[in-house]
Image (cartoon, rainbow, N blue to C red):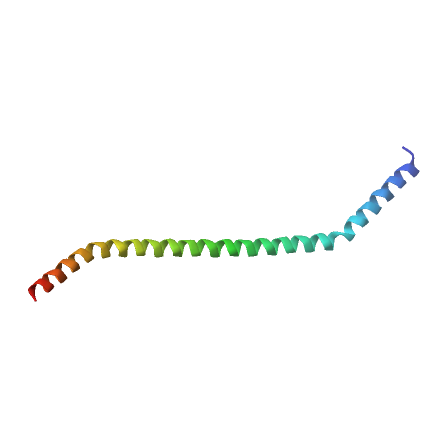
Length: 87
């Protein structure tokens, strides 16, 4: 390869590198936006997970209350019937 051919190839690569360098700010901005969106998505997922855990806890408490109520109600009704029959 002749020296002039080598110089030509070096210049072509230099030109391509300079063009690529011009895009660095655009690419950096794109990466920053993607990072921000990822952070926001993670925050949303964490919030949804917490809401689901809270809902599960409330459902478990409601189920427990329903079980207690179903046991108490017959006893309460029997007592009320007993009180009513004593009148």
